[in-house]
Length: 504
Image 1: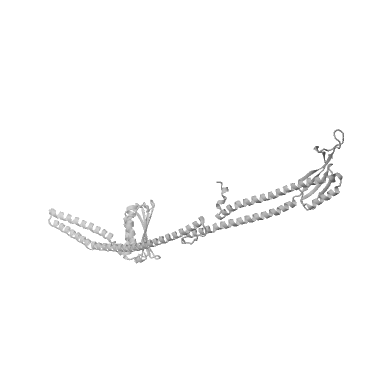
Image 2: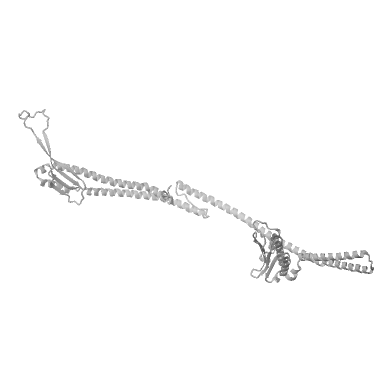
């Protein structure tokens, strides 16, 4: 449909109803007014035409003698009286047959002439009577003689009557105004009725819309009494029923949400307690492991290495004794002495290798430099060790690390050790940077390990055992671990460990 014919789509229901109600009334009012004015005007024209014709004919019949006899003064008085007494006559003219205007009277009333005039001929009738019969004898009328006398008609002039519609139109206009007023009152009554009907529809609809907006805003319990009948009343009743149903559903949902929230809070609290217990357990396990490592390292250092030193000394003594016995035997010593010396020398080399392995094992179990130089020295010694593997490392520190406790230093050392191990095993990096910073502002130790290796997509690749171990160890110390990486752009591992675990 053409959009020009859809102008009413933006109208309200009240405006549409008023338009539907008033349009036929307005059309009827316009038609009635037009027909009424046309009827009054036609009535004036018909009445003027009828009166003009009658008046002209009557004057033509009565003015014959005056025109023939030339007694125009009486005729003028008669016509003047007629013109002045009848306000619908504008002018009467009596014209002789020669065309001379014999009598002309104009009304003294303030009226306007009609365009047309009504005329009637003034005829003179002559009666011819034959006094003799056809044979020349005097005529004697008989009862059987039915021949009429001979009549001759002669036009001696005519009467022209000009009418005026002014007074008749004034009277009809007064009547038309009365009719117009009555029609206007009917139109106003129809408009008032349309307004009342539209309002009786608009008010309930506005109340229904307002309640629906309250429901949309979350206030489901609304009061909407049924104030009318029909479809609007059904709508009001339906909104009220819907409000009650929604309010009950809301309460039921709130109860379920509250119950579910309590369950979730209980589960969360239980999970937090379990997580706290897990952290304590991990921290305890790590502490036990470190203590056990320390005990094993001490036992290896104090007992195994001491025994290896004793074995080396004994083998060296045996080697010396074998050499002396071979020298005392002269130029032809027994071959067993040479074998004894070689075996003693092999035992010495084996003891030295075992001692070196024991030292390396002790450093892995419990780095001595951590107890001697603290975390700074231990990490630096670790970085120097990995430099020999072909990766260029940079190392920097900030802060006084003497404040660190033994357990925090061990946790930080193990986390850095795992991070560097991942760099060497998986990244294929050519450069790596390690930084340690002890912040006085937040009271935490910040560790960062960055490399330029292959990297990976954290959203696709799953975390390895090493990263999980780093994160759990950090969580146990009250800290956090963050891994940032993307394919081809390396990896950045940042660790934050609070100096006071209670703050984590």
